[in-house]
Length: 129
Image 1 (cartoon, one colour):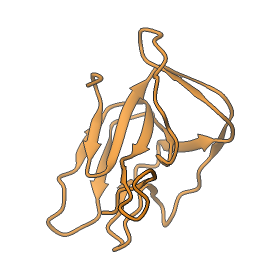
Image 2 (cartoon, rainbow, N blue to C red):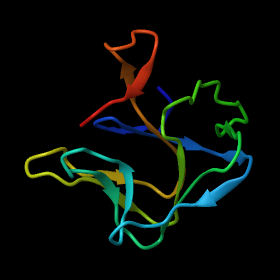
Image 3 (cartoon, helix red, strand yellow):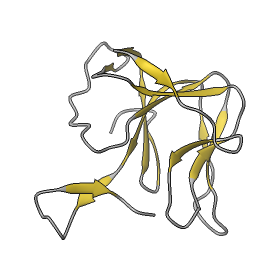
Image 4 (cartoon, one colour):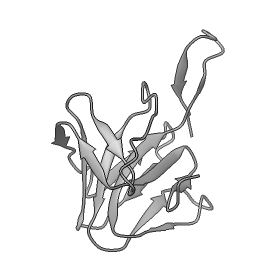
């Protein structure tokens, strides 16, 4: 596991030192960034105003602190980049759900876990929460 990685349900945040490629801003939804959508409305969110989120507009490369490129197949993972300028919290909007995770300042690659589809065993789909 990469030091500083945060997992909450199907959402994974990996700290990165550099992103090469074009990114576009993601808009807040009701004052928050949704890192993982849930079909029952209990999303994984960050609400702090000093956090920004962007998504790849083209193919991007992600690098760890030591300069090592992350070698990941990002197909179907709902990739985003989250810039945290001050401490923040990753919250699961459910009663009795996951505890909030403290997110230290930094840049994070945001991934949503995927699983095999039973309808098409060769295919993957985002994990539903």
